[in-house]
Image (cartoon, rainbow over the protein chains, first blue to last red):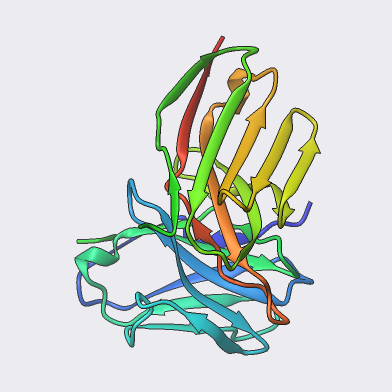
Length: 111
Length: 114
């Protein structure tokens, strides 16, 4: 069964450093998303991406964040200068319609 | 008022019990209603979704939507220890030619005791 994959599973970084989180969406899907979940809190929408551009972004997705689909299979989230409050689980999701399928997540720890 | 509210529990039931999980919402634009299951430190797994009002059944799981009350439910019949997880409701508005963002509830932690 096709699934969304994410790497790395856990990333530890120092405050102020740049991180890139990687995702491989399900191959025939056209819509891609990033969500995050701070420990003990709700899953929150960050950004959606379709046809090589951002469709929608939340207030959380400020200038420190960017997304890219560098080739036909990968979808990345970059955080330029990490803050302590960026520590969270980051989930990639993809869909071809309504149903969004999530990856296993990358746990980002900023120290 | 929060957009999506869900009682976080925890909810503990004996094996074989019928479980009822619920969410309320405030945004009338929501048209798609999903239920996800999430195990600890894993990604949400889609269980089922319903469009607009009505019921949908899939095996031991039944989803109900009452748009007039802005209330959705997930029922689990004959609950099993393997059903122990956090259940998330999620909703989205009608798509404008694409797929809309999901707005999640906080999740209800369910434990089914053997």
